[in-house]
Length: 104
Image 1 (cartoon, one colour):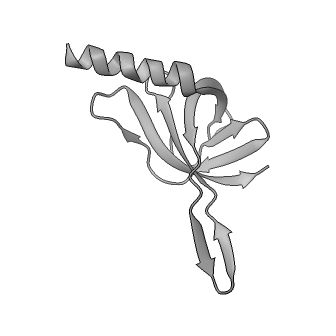
Image 2 (cartoon, helix red, strand yellow):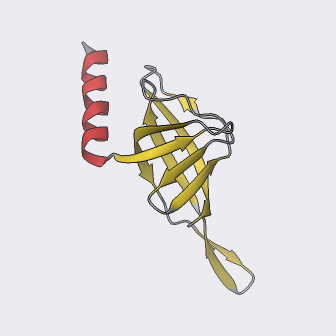
């Protein structure tokens, strides 16, 4: 019962907040999936300047794809690269990982 409730909630999040993206693996294979992308603006001080971190927190359903370090996420005119090992949630429904913006 609890698992079904959580799965329904995850599906609702992806249906309402998700956007279509392309995952391109290191070997060039591509796949269209729905992802929830959060881009927190974390400013950092560097001397007299302030810079904003260009890292996105990405979530995709585990049934859609299996992301790996080095894969790319293509969103409209932006390209992100997965730079750390994706983590599976506790009920194996969703991958979460960070990806750095490398091109617009």
